[in-house]
Image (cartoon, rainbow, N blue to C red; front, top):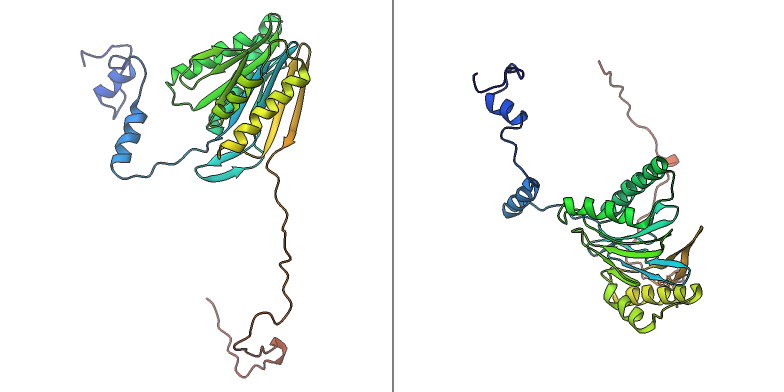
Length: 290
């Protein structure tokens, strides 16, 4: 065909339109939302789309005089069902950088793993310790590319040559830099604790207690958050992880005795059980299988 480049020969059984598309002549520019339109069409046809497992979540972070304290609850939910009582929501990014994740559990897990591998490659290439801003740039560019379809709301914190740093990263790629931050479904309750108790130049113990109180407020006031309080303390040259730092939702013990004596329930009828050994064979037939 005269419309096809001679360097791209037609393959047997493949149409001209397909070859033109593969050559890039009809390739659409910009973002592709074909799957979004497909899902919307399927929903209109009555197809029930699968639901993602959401972490519900209360995640927080606060800067103190020597570093950063990150905190998270440990409940993962799928709709109204609690799927995991001890979900780990504080993810490793680098030796000096950690990240709390809220949103879809798979998205937060694999997004942070991807950035962690990129930070390690950057460290090997440059021979220097990675900066928090480097991880932030990788996260925000990746999330912006998918326009919120990757459901990962993150609290990123760490200590580098510039000192302690704390950021929030929203699923669409926007970011904030603040001395204390909260995200997740329990973030409003946690923020009220921070606004009441935060002070400039806090020491480590005060910061850990403030984070503990903020996560506790999220757990108590939000059904999507629950179980335990996990805390990670990042300082120059050291990281301490407390998992759990405190157990909030303890399983209650039974208050009464639920054992009943024999005879409590009235027997209306009974059948005598014949033991197998008392049975006798009266007729036997062997069947051949060809």
